[in-house]
Length: 435
Image 1 (cartoon, rainbow, N blue to C red):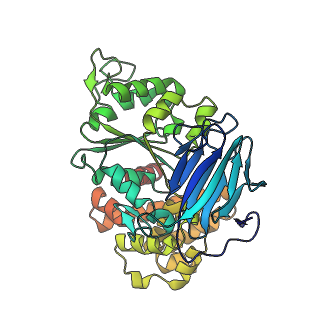
Image 2 (tube, one colour; image 1 turned 180 degrees about the vertical axis):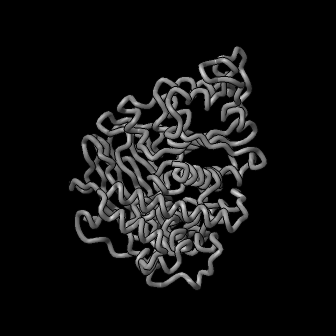
Image 3 (cartoon, rainbow, N blue to C red; image 1 turned 90 degrees about the vertical axis):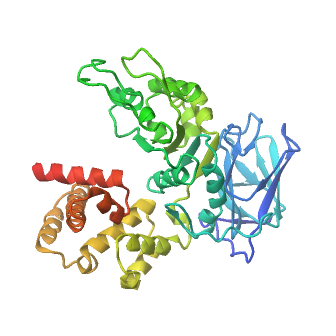
């Protein structure tokens, strides 16, 4: 059997000297004869969002993922109901080299390795504010460029901290709406009873506390792009209203009696598996299909070989540092890290090193920082971590604002974390000082 199991099952596959595309052909089952050439990560299942959509009732909506890598075609079973077998061996994750048969439900797939249609993966190391030189990222750049030139809805998927907001902004800035506004609405940052007002606006007196007319993010994004972040957390009762706005391209303010045009490109982002959310009844199927005209999944940092150092140097430069001053020992430690917080966690680590300098590396912190750390050590882990992080955020924000004369826009640009997030840090810092 020409299958090499992943480290979770057996030894890792040896690195292949050349990259290949793969062709997957359905040889058995109700979709027999269908085929798909794979040059980037795709999903296989019965969901309409899958690149290889099957009609076999024994196949799960999001059954498995296939991704070309240097080690071969990586296959990952996505928690399917009936499992996945390669040459009759049940697998959860493995690498295929070509000439294998994959069974799922009553369907059989034949895997063939072929020469890349467009040559090797592009040598680009970034797209807008999204950076990375790993194969996992470089294979996504052509898709990013194509999506940027369209105005279709896009769902960006990925773990927390993988850079979904940065990609959405890059798609906006590289597209035909670049001169229009880019608005962000975070479904997790607004109380459920206020989400409708934040999305569509409200008229004066529409509810208690509505003392003035207010535009919603659809109106604010007119002629531009609206990113609806964490769309998977949107309250089920509000999903039909969002669907209507997307289909009719018009909105009505809460308490209003007229419809307003909504010339907006919508990009949605989520850390959740929306296929599973639909299956569980927590997300409307019709809204999902309206949003998932295009779909792109950002890989976690642990799967982006070689990107940690590239990103660390990029963030260091953005903070105004000389990359020659980045300690090799720190870079080596970062390269071997797991980074559960992904790119955001790495960016914060770089910012912490830049802000605290030798103090962050040697532990010889300034008296106040040392006192904070020492006092936190006697607390439960979560409280200790929060106290130390709050102190770091306070010192970091204060230093940047001081360096840039209190200009939030310039301080945010220097921080490399985005103005919206920097403003949140600033507000949190000032609140803690008042308390």
